[in-house]
Length: 449
Ligand code: LLP
Image 1 (cartoon, protein in one colour):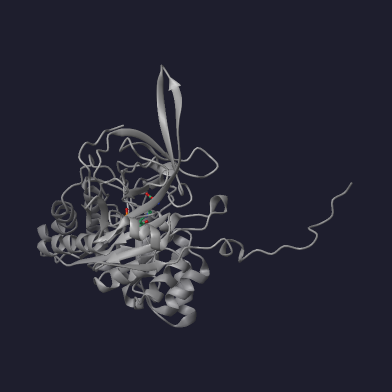
Image 2 (cartoon, rainbow, N blue to C red; image 1 turned 135 degrees about the horizontal axis):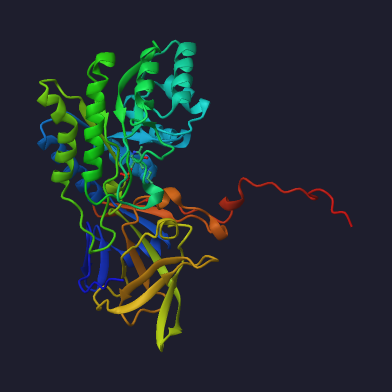
């Protein structure tokens, strides 16, 4: 495990008068007012990431459309921030679609995904007239076409492609290789066949091709290679469908979970991917399609952090005369399953002692009934005590959206800090909420004696 001597502060985090502040509000005040564990969201950090991405896109001089992948953080207020920032939104389920609508997205700014869409999801999307449905398989093509026929409506569609690229990331979030459940493979002709099928469906308007090769990618070469393949494919199918409106490269750009993580500069990431999509067209003297992105983690990951209260601290022998000190927090697996699922690592600060040297090793454990290591090793002040606050950075993506109630713990609240003001965007669940959908009868069957 790495040892970080310099304290890392992200976004609007700062240390003043021995207190850790986010957007000018102190972590103590936030914990006192809203309780812990608490999801915090620094609106200025998310806005800055969006602005950087948009200016990198503008600098390419090509037409680029940018969406937010709502699965990364579907809190309505986060979606509203994305809406106000001018982004489109992508949804992958009926619930995410409803979230986008509730946040105020008009249908023409919503794009729908899903590798196993229900008939009801397809029907709702067509009825609403959303911007695009990304068709993932032959059944999607048939069903969407049938729904369009029965409603007498046309629908913009794209197809999701598996470009045959295996990105460098955790297996569970690699999706671009041939051996995947997602999309039509280019290599075996399935993608070409899909285009032919769509061109026979009068009410499906073939708007483009899409891929999403994986997530938490620290540089763009995998996406660039996939983009290049998609551009070749788009040129190949031109005689059948003309010039496509869009080549969509999905999301995937990572964030710096640890201070030592290096991320490709955003200008270079965007320009080489846009270039891979457009250059093959320009070389042939043809106008290129628009290039689409749908970033999730990059826009919200570093903006989010989780504030916990440290509980029990204990030191145990681990052999060879060595010891390990466990600090347990009042959350863990249920509010952040990523360490267990993907071996994800996080960086944290003692928010009650931000000015003390963080040089003593601790293992941060959750409060759940299994060995839930939230952070296998992090350095905190040696004086860290029960009752201190711990701020875990970079939890803005796929924490709120993947949270569970394991061990019957209510899900945390989420506070958005914007313009120096905390705003309670998601209320803390109560223990009563945990039982609100359950029924119990006086007898459940009979027990034979
Ligand atoms: N577009 C599509 C079609 C996607 O499936 C995804 C993410 C994105 C865009 C956004 O990807 P991002 O920019 O966030 O990498 N639960 C995992 C991540 C799963 C990503 C699924 N798809 C995690 O916690 O790491």
